[in-house]
Image (cartoon, rainbow, N blue to C red; front, side, top):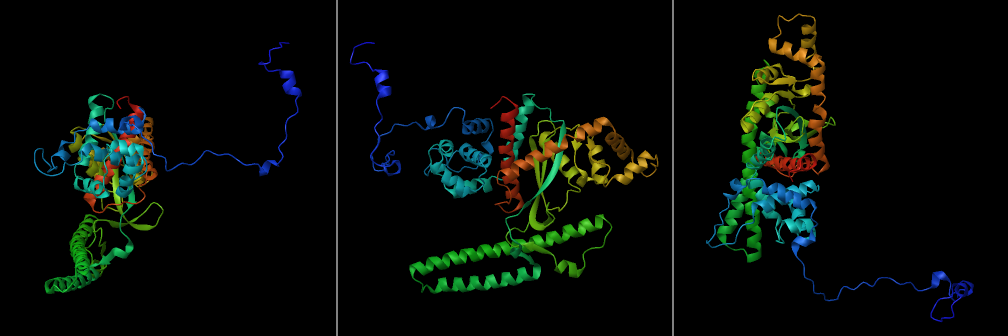
Length: 456
């Protein structure tokens, strides 16, 4: 063994008895990393380095950069070389909404807060502070333009021959409206409420004219007056919508050979004061809620969302041909196949779509069972050629194979909506709801495109 004193003698170390602490283990002092919050630090950071190269926000930005937002940009009144503060880039605002939805956030207030706290949102916002008013205003003022962005996201893939857009599936989902049953009133109640609000407006305007209020009280009354005028406007819109609702009900009844609504039935018609365009509908759980019926069309093979309709119809009946015509106008093309569930079993609808050269795939063991039995029994005197073709198609192995794709194509997008916060709408009115759902479709399509295609 070496005599060098600088080397460890393992045998000596092993034989040396261990020193035992004088205090029990539980009484010995512990040591922790110090918490120092008042230490001044100097950091040099680049916003771009805060986010990894494979972070999802970069995918969102790349997706948005491929969209033409000139339609939204034309509404910007902040012009270069003119006085005034510059507007936020629409790419930033739509990116924030898409990324927020992909993270299950659908509130403008929450997004605004995340732009201060969350690195992904800070990166998208370019370090800017963005108020919830700016976010919600952007969403509502451009609701009519978001459909074009959905079309662009699909056209991009069609032009690159990644999808053929020949086979379509359609399904509907009822989403609870941003209105409670406490706002659901008959015309008599609405008229009475309008009279009461008018009286209150007159009182407040009279107080303003007298000018006997101090500054604080004057501001309070001005806010109250503005709210009262807004409420009067909402009630007026609700009364107008009630008349439209009556006409719709009478038209539907006449189509089915029924008499018009009686006076008593007309008196019992109700609409919501805050969202007159929603309707009381039977939900999936069997209960009734104020809701909007959201019709969504998807590409059968890629499962991408290609079109949206917001309808006041409590059922899916009669909605197939409307969506089919809308899609033809949107994409300027014919479709080979159109797949729907039994809720769309309207003979007039089916024949309307098939007359345009599109094959319909729909179950024939439910509402169309009598038609199926007549065709199979060759009792076809009262059956059109179009319906005969449908029955024979659905009885074939090919028809069953095509229809089996429906569940995945239609239900996936609905599941995405539910899993990302859309249990109840936060916006009101058909136009705003349509715009909001189209933003959801953009977020959903981005996710599908990233998963299936190497373009993002």
